[in-house]
Image (cartoon, rainbow, N blue to C red):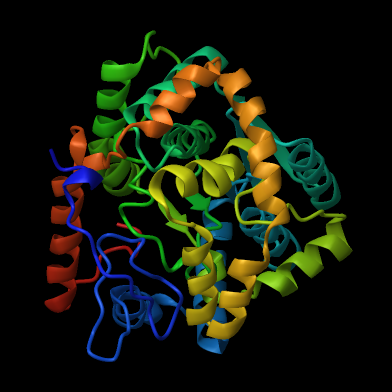
Length: 387
């Protein structure tokens, strides 16, 4: 057994630079009390973060290349549009500031809030962007999500996230598009423990959990395996995932204000809360079953990127009580939609937490890929930054 119940207790400690603490079972601190997440930011992420004039020149060169390749096509590139702040602001920047012709791809996994639907409608209408919505078969999605709930895993968003990226890339390829824009960014997402949110692109892990705890078959559910995602798409199809927000000064509060002013956007109150399931997972499930608060990671990211002080992050973490009450109210909605009874749910919550290490996965393969990339960089061989 390699789950949480086999891990020795760790004396409580909180980072002296950000607000990550020992709710991350893999956290490490140096002699000054600074955690490994901060060191990872300094050593591995900051070198690829260019919110300055240098970054803008780099981005302009990338955009020029995208436009050249898109001259004979209906669109220059595809963009994943979830309705969240990151993807919404990226759509605004890409259309209004960079002048790109976008194919917006939205994957409906069955959990869109009404507010998210309105925001997406406003974005595509006011930016004059074509939208392709891929609707995931609900019975398959529900079966997968019940399987992950019964597996006792922390990252309950794996089914949603895997479907999102798999469908996004397949739609881009269907239109002959080689470039995909992603709202992923270092400024607001530099911190996230592996134990909290294991890689959603691990198809072996997803299918192993479903085989053990699911009931039906996955027929139309969009999937992509390790080889196709990391090698076929990137080196045969020569697809590139571009993260423009890493080349610009991306400040969350300023981005929200711009979206509200220009696109009639309404904020959800939290990161990724455009999905009712993700909001419930963050504010109820993970806290109650695993004892950690995902907002620690997001607030720590803002501290590291200079968007707030450590003290402000501490206050923000302690002050948000309304969303916690909303999450409790959402429990009935989530259980009813998943067709999980209250008695079964109480039993699942009482079982020992598990980690991705308790089930088959490609964790070692992912680590090998990362180690190989770092070794090549040490030799002066730089692959595409998204490889």
